Length: 447
Ligand SMILES: Nc1ncnc2c1ncn2[C@@H]1O[C@H](COP(=O)(O)OP(=O)(O)OP(=O)(O)O)[C@@H](O)[C@H]1O
Ligand SMILES: [Mg+2]
Image (cartoon, rainbow, N blue to C red; front, side, top):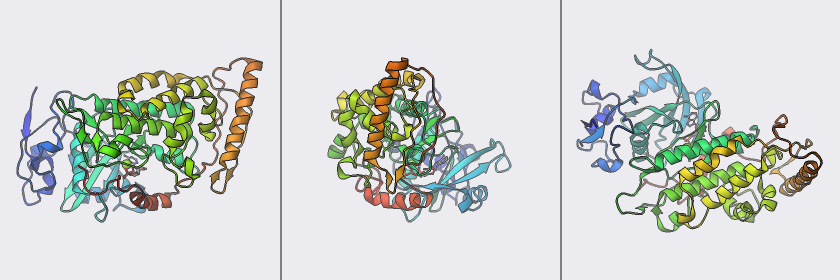
């Protein structure tokens, strides 16, 4: 195994404007399998960019250090026409890179995330992202193409994901409902990404698994983004990592919230929450619902293992177009992932094995067309349940009459989503959410 010694300064050359950066150190990255991944703890003072030189093991390299000027050029000065969205780190803009910007750059669209200097996140989250994502490569992780570190400015440059986040698809008003098979494909892809992190030679706990951090490629391949809260897994005989509790309300595992003890099983719980969101089309926390339905897990978990009740919680926007056997299996899996006892949750490799066949389940019922009218505050729940019940009855009687219909998937029809963000509320919401997610989400520095 070749281990190349490089220094901390060489990782982030553009932070040290007074020094002449070595041309050898313009690109940083390592191939996961051939080289030892470095961790944040390998840096003597990760909070300071002026930390003394530290020996670190890195190699390979395909991550570019961009200048702020270059990133301004490719995003047309972060113009609103290129705006893609905004989260806790700051705004994200689309740009385009090619070899005119830098010789050797492959022509491609990119997403440029700019640290909001007035926001709650900062250098630490940016550095965590560069260190983790710069070294990890997998088809289900978003690729970090580069970064920029100039004076107080911190930016990240990713491969562009044309279909944006899963959150936008599931919850944004006017979005077209995702078909069942696509939901299963997304769950499987995201599970593979998480499984890769957990089973790496030096395991990683992702800590922020949620619908907004799952990005979608043009063919709905799911990729995990946002490694600002990631942690190295426990080492040696340790069973957990002790941390300050960070994450997002509604997704974080109960034992992690109670004790601050972080394990890979905390991620498995969060995976269960996202799987539940895919099944129900509901957000993990939704303050616009009646109080007993506001927390998705509390409301839905008791019904996951009861096949008679499952139909009541399935997303009405699926309009009954899903494999019942597939839904039962996915629901049983979500139930296990959401166990209050971490040891009873499955490993991510078991999750992947369980989900693998579900994307091919195409025993979709063939039913009459029913249009569900959204109410002012979204879909009227009672009405939705009633329709769902009616549809279930019709399905049952049709099955009796016709036997099972395989592969008769009727034309999918879009219907209005019950709720959620417009582009403008998304931005406002992101800020509001930080308050709402308190004390969990991105409050202060990650530990
Ligand atoms: N690589 C990308 N390609 C395309 N769009 C992206 C990319 N990265 C982010 N986005 C868009 O930018 C939005 C904001 O992303 P970001 O990860 O900063 O925040 P978030 O996940 O919504 O919130 P949080 O700060 O809680 O993670 C995403 O919802 C998505 O629409
Ligand atoms: Mg995110």
